[in-house]
Image (cartoon, rainbow, N blue to C red; front, side, top):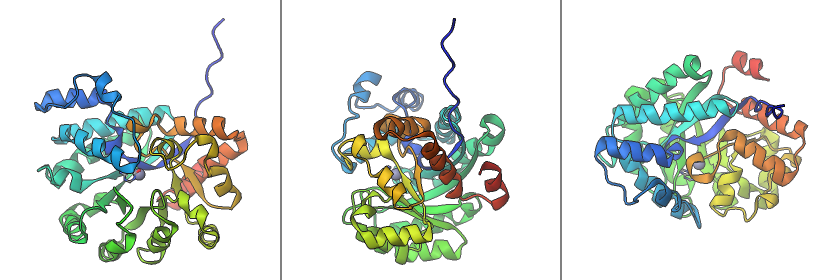
Length: 326
Ligand code: HPA
Ligand code: ZN
């Protein structure tokens, strides 16, 4: 007799996913060949073996280097379509997807090429994959505030395709307050706001994201647990945190998954979600993260269902659609 079928993954929303971080070695080599780009790795295996990180910056170095293969609208389309295929197999029904425009425009790839390629894949996703999507445009916090402002102005013709702005890349030394002005413009334009904060940076950066940027969600935020008043504030407002467990271990934000603060965050009444961040680099997509925390932290089924439900509560969905998922 055949073994029992694996249970279907819980339906969930993915709220912290960098599309550039879904570039698998196989697709990287395919696109390199298609575009005549030479990668400094002889094989997929050699590239995979470079996926050993000591901190956020050591990951970012490889993340930005591999983007050299992304050049055409088709490349961005194929990247997003490959992600959506994997996401659906992991139970994802709704995905809010980050992209890093400055990482592409700095290499001479026009913003319209990036957005049109991604949008073509996202527009087809409900029918092709059974996934609804949102696009979140991130500013690179280790670039200047002026560069973020110029990026926002360049994106104005495309704002109908963008739901929110975000803030990513090297955190320490680049506090949210640096981006006060561009977030004010984004809010005036009717966009939602999120920001990475409290991944490697201190709780003070989470306070700034709340009080100065006016964010609707915090990405990562695990270091909030060092500040009792901050935890109380986040819990009282039910301000969502998009936690990425496998990322935290790979980037050594957390030593061991068994020591992850996720259970303590839930116990503190925080609206926590589980997400994959850069799944091609960190060893797992959405449900892989659910399975990993289930096993390492001995989470029961009710807790896993709470995490899945939280993902829809925290999503930028209209209320009628949200109700369907809750
Ligand atoms: N943190 C900051 N910047 C990033 C990340 C992250 O986890 N992934 C891609 N850019
Ligand atoms: Zn991230």
